[in-house]
Length: 301
Image (cartoon, rainbow, N blue to C red; front, side):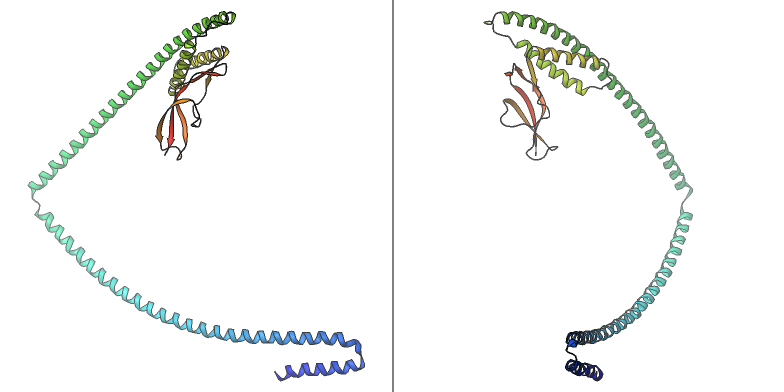
């Protein structure tokens, strides 16, 4: 430490002496003074770190002593547990020996008559199990037959329904043709009032047939032909100036001119209102409504 203090003093003396002889060394003198100050600061930091290191060493030694104490306690606990395990093993072995002796004595006490009844009971249970299995198999077979019959009956009904709807579509197409001829007559005579009853009937039937088609199997006989006929009659319907407003699957709002039935639904978000069924469609003629829709609205809870 004394040497550290003497070095700056000697340097300062040397710098002062050098300044008297060479003023150009003043800048170097300032740099040396700055470096000496920085060196003193670093030595103070090192001294502080040595103090902290000594504290950490003392703390580490204390922790090592605590760890050694815990190891001793752990070894004692292990020895105690081993003693308990040995005692339990001895008691378990004694209990096992006693149980074996008891079972052996019980086996000897069972008489031939009791063995006979056990065999009869087991045979009865086995026979009951076989009968239950046979009965279950018979019921499953009957159930399959009933399901097959229901499926076949449903298929027959769907095919018959398609035939009837196809005939109905043919009739409606014929009536629409007559209606178109009547329209030409009405156009020639502006005072004649247009009758929309047939058009409204056609609209209702189109909606009904569409609903039935959506519920049928795609492989049902005659389904494609009926779909094509319905598409054709819709095009004819539109060519006569009529429009079926598509509302299915759209969001309901209070401003709609419809008759609405509201049904709660857990499949929608709270407050959501979606049109899920068209009971009667909205029909427009030349962009003017001639029939308001009757719909079913699902409301989210």
